[in-house]
Amino acid sequence: MSSSVDVVLDSNARSIHLNGDCQIFSLGSVLDPARINLGDHRPRVVSVLSPADIRRRRLNPALDAFEERSVLRLTVENERVHRHARARRLLSTTVFAYIHCGETVVGFGEGGSESMTIFVRKDGEAGITVRKILSEALTTARWDPDGVGVMLPPFAKAHRQAQYLHALPPSVREFFPAVHDVIERDIPIPPRGRTTVWASHREVIYEMSYVPGEEVSRYVARCSPPPAVIARLYEQIHRLLHEKVHSFGRTPAPGPTVDVSYLRKIEDRLGLCRATAPMTFGPDLLDSERIVINGVSYLNSSTLLARFRSRPDFLRVLEPRFHSLVMGDTNTENIKLTDTTPLENARRLIEAGASRDAIDRALAAITYESTGITFLDPRAIGFQGEGGETRDDPMYDNKPWHNSIGHYDEIHAEHFSMRVRGGPTPQVDIEFVPGNPYQAAYRVRDVTVHGEAVDESAPRGMEDYFKRVMTDVYDLGNPESPCLRDDPYWLIRFVFIMGAHFTAMPPFHFHAEMNGTLRDTYHAQRRPVAIYCEGVKWLNWALEMLEGTRTEFLGIRVPSLP
Figure 1 (tube, rainbow, N blue to C red):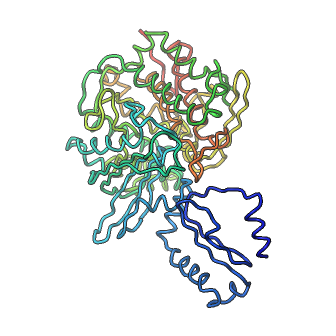
Figure 2: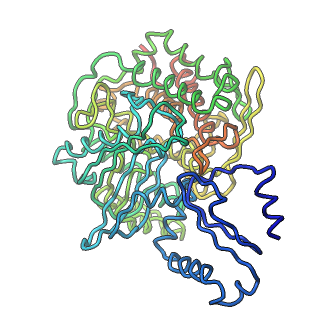
Figure 3: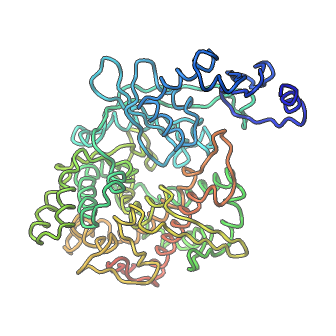
């Protein structure tokens, strides 16, 4: 047996890069650790010479010691860390590197921008601390560390977030967490792990107060509440933003912003995608004039951008008239509910077939005060201002709709399959898993794609509630509404910005393997591809509105252009 092992180790050896300490078991022979080349990492070898070593204790002290260490590690805390590491395709040691002695891991936050959020309880402290880590070591796309504006790298964004939260006006602070410590540092990269000219990773870690409760997206996945409950919640989210956040720092928009804030951002972000995954985000997907998505032909992104830029009158319609304080990333993963009781009361009544009056009273009890809506993870990047000076287009904060009618939650949770066929015109087919928890809650029928009408009188899904929610929040039924006066083309701008959100979002959604490498295939990177396709659809609808070929959207008439 020993000689056969020597042959295996000496002949035609295949090097496997594990990038970490290893526990190795040698069955039937003694393996010398000196024969194992792990570079800077440490091997632990247990040689098991006989089956009796496995059956009985005290025959193999090294094996007994390994068993004891394993049992001691079977704790709830370790289980949380390992589960999170597997979900993120990270080594558990990477996660533990951000946890200090004297701390207990309570849980992890979820998000789509490759940040890591850890909830810890420190010895001697009763409360929970939220530790947010944005690091080049945790991102798949290779952001320029000196990027600015919409190309600001994630680690730099963390510093701006801390500045933003520190600078919030007193009237708004109760709706955001409070920032405590901020650490900026460089992490050396081992020479064998360097893939760029940089010798270190930059990262920013900041700690903030813990907001109890549950994120909106998690609540939806866990409970699949009826669309009427989610629509009422959306109304309250938008009302809070409109009345409390967007009313602060209101000022006339500082000149042309659309090209810089949206069109150029799309180009730059897709350029980063090309550099990160050139086979997936290459000419076959991006450079054709048209792309077919689920059997429908759309203009592709480069053609869309050229069309928008060729019409100055279109750009004027898309320009906001005012800027204000914005949250900047109202993805419902970043919105927390400290009390879901009002939502659950309404859900139970609807599912039990209660009277209309009882249901209406329960829905009316869902307010931003009763549910304790709190915003997490602000974008902290505005137009020509960052951190505490963040001011931008309030329309940017309509992102909750992208979670539902834009299928973001289903895409982010990968409740879908995808097939891509190349050729002069690429074809992408995306099929969502029937009955997935988000589909059960949102009940999106894709009426815009299929040319169908919403049903306002007997609403079945989130699309049927769009007009009602937006009308109630912004008083759109009133011809003298300040919102209609200040933003007469809000519907066109809403659809355009939704498309811009999605089309510029793929760099945050690449999948890396545990060793940091990226599989450059459509299947492995199906999430950023699906997000890109969703953006293409919305940008086409916006262009159709501007060109006058689409006169209605989710029950609302498209306003006439000047």
